[in-house]
Length: 240
Image (tube, rainbow, N blue to C red; front, side, top):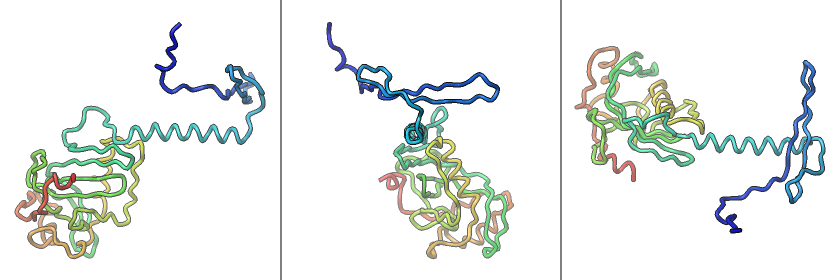
């Protein structure tokens, strides 16, 4: 007979077994017995499951559950959404996506003297991992390519390099977060936080940022693209 065991994958050998016993009473009680296995796979040395053995079992099950959840990280729920440009499914993970110009609810701290409300924001490019977010503005709603020119995002709390200062926002991205949930969470984190100040005196627009949003908030005006300032980089530069 031909030996085909070398064609198998990793072989697993039984080492222990658990047998659960229950009574037939209304208030069911459970008793667990632990068996060791001999070299032939037969159960031996039966004894009640100890606290140490129970902890080892819980640890093994927890590790497997975490591995399963991490495999779901950034997994799309269906067909890949058209606004997704790039996915890095590593442990920390990152996604590059864009959004078209649209009305958004915006919040401002009192010191800016800008009322909270709805306003149109330009098309945007987003790059995020589990812990941080970068954003830029786009000049059109067309799907960007590697050659697409990037503009500074016309918002407060954004550094010149595109990094967003999240302040006291509690960013919590779980290992089981799907692709769609990931992008929505970051958009919500950004737009549900309060804009408060310019970062390192970086003015992201041509003009006065305070006056710009005062003129747009709670109106039907389109975002004035002429106020966007070039960031002197393209989408390809962002991926390098």
